[in-house]
Length: 307
Length: 252
Image (tube, rainbow over all chains, first blue to last red; front, side):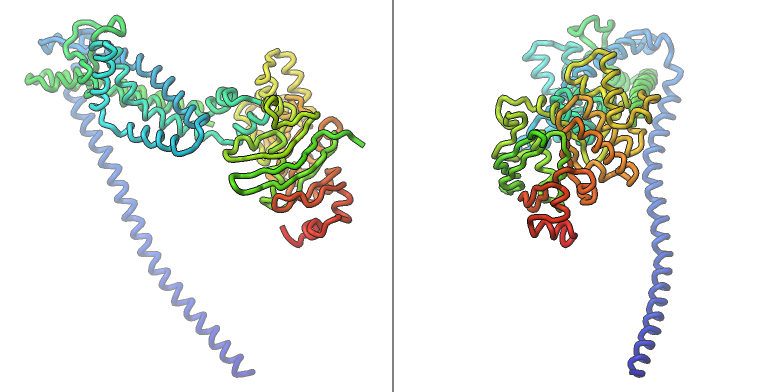
């Protein structure tokens, strides 16, 4: 009995010692772990810095070259062979027309498709297939959409090189992005709210109108606006559908020819004269201001309606 | 003796291949409280959801048998599921008010059924909130967001919202499981009050609660209705061995 007791005491002492060793090891590892944490922190900060620095350099360069060119004349003049008389009016209004066509179309079609897929479609392999395809379309290069627009809108539907053809092409381009964003916003609506509505005898459509959409709207609008700011910066598909680089008028109807900001900028950059590249910088400033305004609007809407 | 509000005959329910309810027969009395008890996964919530066809929302559900409410089989083709759910209201496990004002929450049901008269809506909102014993607490802030209320208040708001469409039957799916004891007590008192005008079927995990508030109790196990009896009888001297074992805490 006594021997056993002694043994057990001995064991306890041993255990204590082991526990002590263990603790020392952990303490030394804590130092290592913290060191690694600092390293990770630093690396991620550097990663962020790369983006910020590049943007800063870009902004500095553009503002230095272009700021003095952003004048009332610049905003009110059309394109010209002479840099001193060249302005951005045609391109700016072209871009505004494009947004005015693209925004409502993508919103209505995109939200409609998202509602169908999330609320009405039966979940199964067909809906999965559609979903995968839409996500894939979001990654298709924009020039491909330009070719599609050229074939369907410009040629088959005979819309010619109109601002409508351009707007429809941009709609196709950003539709997948809008559908994906709207689907995510709709999927984030808690099912308990849908059930509450249905359990009172509401139809699906009433539930969508009165419960799902109001809840999902901020997310849908943010997604749509961000997609639109992508559309407004697109050049390639507009070149494909025949956007003009040299226009002396603004579109008067959706069937008129048009230019757009990125097209005008691209055209100026390609000119050999130094002044034209400064004009391009001025054009970029105008484009950036529009983009910033749109992104700001997206953030504002998100914050305003956030619960 | 109250007349029968719901008569369930030969009810079988399958989720795909799996049978979740087996040959259920129950007659539920008007203006009474019927408690459904049993361990998790026994089919009591599934059974509750057959009564207002909320199971229709789940894919691959197959139902056989009959559920008669006022002599109409609620699964027959001529029944509008919207009309059925107007008559058979439901309160869920976790409070689920809409992110709208208190007023708008209660007015939601009457509005979707086509009522837009402001005066009538005001009346219904007040009557429903009084009915759910919430009026005095919220009458000065009907325009406030419902999500700002406490959990217990939110659940009573959900009851008021269900009452606003003037159902005959009220289904409650563990309505107090997310509430603190004081809020639970309030909801239980409310159930006692409501049974004067409504037929109530309540799923509960809490056997004391079933014993406190119900007139009859149905004990489910693995999709079978083991025993359906007067609550006093079921909890003091059950007819079945398995009921006895469950209520004395030997399993579940």
